[in-house]
Length: 183
Length: 183
Image (cartoon, rainbow over all chains, first blue to last red):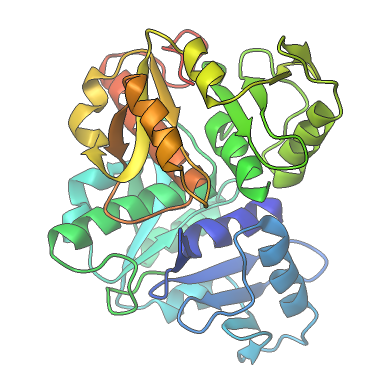
């Protein structure tokens, strides 16, 4: 759970404010009730601070909701539903799926071409073969962020930096609500 | 304090292990007893996990020690002493001081030339004019990690990635105990 909390914070926080163009989807497959998806929407999110306790508290509140196949709102910008990897990927149909793995193509080689991206990161236990198969069937490309294995929250910071740099080069304001959405 | 905890974690953690070539110096200038320096030595550090509570606990333990001008060991790899920015900079005499500020030179333009570096980052309240004067008198150069203002812990992750990439290009093993030390 700690690593998820840090990922939420890395994905959504700027120094002074929040990345309103980012959504975070946490796919929870652990016991006691595997198959829940919690979604943080940067645009509508409230009550989130950068510390782990804060995101942990919002996750805990969402888990108290009676999750169904349909979205249930927990707190502003936080939603929960029942779902698995397949249903999550179905929601991203047509978008650019980028799966982080150490042997992937360096993000610096393709950052400038990335459009409408969805980044997929495993936790410290990794992604199973079966899950990888589903990712590749959905069209995911494998990318990496550097020469060394890092925690997922650090990978998210590195992804943002690459995209921020590309947006700045294009003359856009990185992290703004009008810049390209990322999931 | 939260931001310091996250900085310690970002500076020292790899996915599977610790950056043994990294030291972290926390300069604590807040009340009730301003002027303490806590040093985390990657090479000797024990009892640290990636979560905020873990680094917070080691910091708290160190602060319980009776700090003097000389180093006092708190837990393995964690030391505390009395000191200010001036005494901290004196300890880095002869090394490459790199001060993170948004208007600095892009680290990507100079990462390949950085030798024996010490990176200096302010907290969310920034660095005072007087402190900046001391940094420049000590020879610090201003660098930046991207086009957008980020939390210090995210900046540390980005610095590591730049140096990891340079070390990998040189054929070294990034993050290893034999790679170049960083503070």
